[in-house]
Image 1 (cartoon, helix red, strand yellow):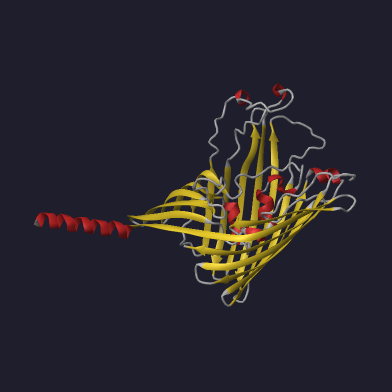
Image 2 (tube, one colour):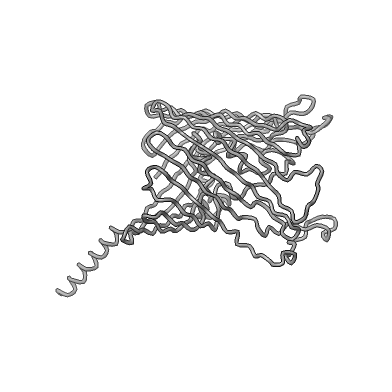
Length: 421
């Protein structure tokens, strides 16, 4: 009996030590809003075509999510950690992206950390995205999301037939190896990331299979790009935060498309600089972003009206103003394109878009908040950016019209509630 008692006490002691050295936390956000949108186009004769929509959206203030994170103290100042975070679309009860089963698409990492910093493996946020979120009063959520974020991640970057391609690694990258500086550097912080594309490569490259035949009148004449290099990302971020000041510079290079069989690789290079300063009564934000898409060809091919280096420059200024239990948020952002099909040889002005966003958050408690946001986007000279969540612009023709409609303006609003746990 005495022996059994000692064994039981030893087991309880071991369990207590384990719980003291490791921890697992369940966390999440449930965010829902009534959102309304309008996207308007204009025909050459001045006819306005409006596409409107009212929805119950998810993530107007903070993205809805469910996650698990944990840390184990290994001794000697070293800790092992994991982070599994899944996006949710709680308006329809589904997982992010698919509307079906839950998957850890927001973040899924395992790491080791110590006095030299943290080594992190898995799916994680890329360095260049952090500046877009941290230095935006709306944190790239809901209708108030800045045009910098809309342009940097969107298909065609808001200019039809511009030569731009979608950036699959704008927010996060899978198969990544990341390193973070330790938090004991007197306010300096930094991150470096390299993400593998995990594709099979051939040497010599001409042996790379061309991919699946395209669906055309004669499939033998066209093939889909094999994307042998797409998905790779390399980038870094370095900043300084002390007291009310926070400033950071980031750079990233993402391989967004390739056809190795035909000898071409397309990359998107992004660098951005952001800063914020909290004066107490008001906190100000600012960011500059530069995007440049580049296509490398195996041979020197002359394309008289082709675009190999289209670009986009973006800027943002914003403020947040605390008012008792609430917070006023406001931001102005703009994007200007260059070297796109529309302005090749200087025949047309640079396409441009700008956005005004205004919002208010009222905190019912530390975890629960009510919020409202309204945003307005104006497009000029062929640009086609819209409020985040809004339907695509109508760009077809109408009976009796002399030409296709072009994007004009977009309006959106969110009215919702957010609960965090």
